[in-house]
Length: 391
Image (cartoon, rainbow, N blue to C red):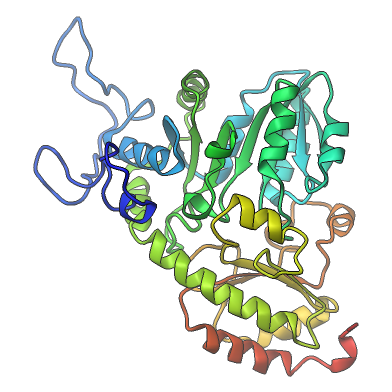
């Protein structure tokens, strides 16, 4: 369907996965096959073994490639499988520059695993291009971005980083989980590898674990595919089908969740018991203008800071609508505690240094009525003593 210049909203439904060419079925068949019969002794067919390629997984890979504006997509068993496989492009002695408030699982792979293979790293505040430039070394091979970052929603100037990377012959990786190609298309801004935890907004229903990687450069795509095939952490066909189904409603889900997130962020930013709100849709957010320039919206995730861990516990014990859980990007709102959930892999002193305090909560806004969520928070915040506010 790519010959038409459809809008993104339409492409979610009208793509290569729209109709099965063999039967006309308006749903991608789930090919539960680990191996494929070869009809010609001298010339093997397109598929031979499902680790190397499967029609159901391929439908998802083609769909995400088209949505991100890339030439090749790859589907993995989880977001961390996608990120880890992308890091396999590095070799011993290489160096990577990483955004400092990166997701805890990414922090762990960089600090606990890559270091064992002689791959060095430097964490920087990626909102400061001077810091990034100063961190680049002769052996720097990758600059790794998360924007907006997890959990402080810091916004990185993507084009600025891409220009630095190209000047220094580095690849750029970007975790696009929070915004998805619905709101931000990094490949169009010059990024080399876009990564997703498709578990989150892309699938959207808290029922599947999946990761995706997309590239524009065909040669880089071939290198990454060889690693995917060698490493083997590929997405199963049932899960690929669930992500494809979730993608169909991405536009309407994210539109509603983002509108609600804006309303909730504005409410929390005025509440006397909330010390700070982190959301790039608020005009006082440091990355507000950059976000408007490089993305089509601020997304549906926000964080806010209360006085301390005791205040967090009181709030969590009193809210009724959000589930208190790891993860984000679902139809139900999810309230998370980064210090013990997404960033538990990060040592306490490293978390504190980055502003990931014991009073910080992250809210992924779902499809509930925004006024109901606000009312729920209002009642829970009433349980916190006023003296805990520093406003």
